[in-house]
Image 1 (cartoon, rainbow, N blue to C red):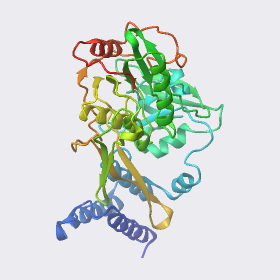
Image 2 (image 1 turned 120 degrees about the vertical axis):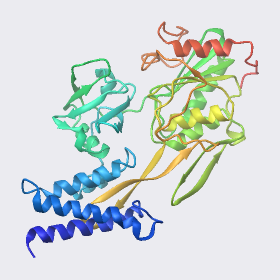
Image 3 (image 1 turned 180 degrees about the vertical axis):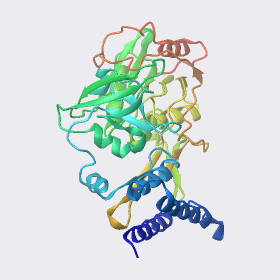
Length: 404
């Protein structure tokens, strides 16, 4: 058997193993019919090997095929080579520095898309915007890489620079940007008192401890006379989904906050604990397209429990959790294994949370630069979402409640 034929056998064997790991995605319940696409794949691979115009790099072909298979499921599932998997297990980055981006994979063109830059990060300070398409990172096109691989390219030594080529809506020419990598520091929860005794609360990032920090900020605002609340989740996110559950519970004394479920993950409900309630005051929540992950857990819980009004535009739609599965030869597959749903069963992943009051035209980080518990400066002139939230809370239809 020639080297080429041996290599083909290895490739086909890898596909068969991968098929079993994924669990019959090509047709679990269809009997033998499920293997028809697999036989077609093998035949196509044979044609590439035998009659393609050049001697193909079959390793590259196989890698691209596996990436395409995983990314056809969702932007967060991907294939890792043995080298990538070793790096992932070691520290998941190529250094201690990063530029601070929440990312997704743009489905139609295949490039990396910015959900939002993390508030206060190097990317945010350099002018990266939600919705930007990163065409290349240090000259490497993002069409041929997954999110894990993009994370490696964006990370590096603190103080080093990464070169980005960005496509932005409304601009015909690409935006070229050089961003210095920094050691990440999660932005803090902030609060201030607005006019008419409205307490404004900003949560830019959901990380461990955010629920406790939010509770303390709510207490400080109540002590200053807040009788209504605005919760700002715009351009906010973080993969700490249970931190989102904890924040939602601060405003709910009953009801299902959300539940998680997957093919092999039994349904798990997160029910509000009345002992963790921190505020019964009238509430409006701000969100935008940059609101994702844990922030969406809060929005959908407030919305479906009729606890407050959601103001802004539909959120991003990122509510799945991934798990790594090792493959023969040292490679691995990162696969989404369960999703979060609203209490009514609404899917958040890829759909987002619809607002009660659709309002566009807000700043990316409307509260950046303000000190915690800062003075009442009122909403910025272009912050139409915050203005609408204040209008709703000042409406006679909103019940007057005792401070809590």
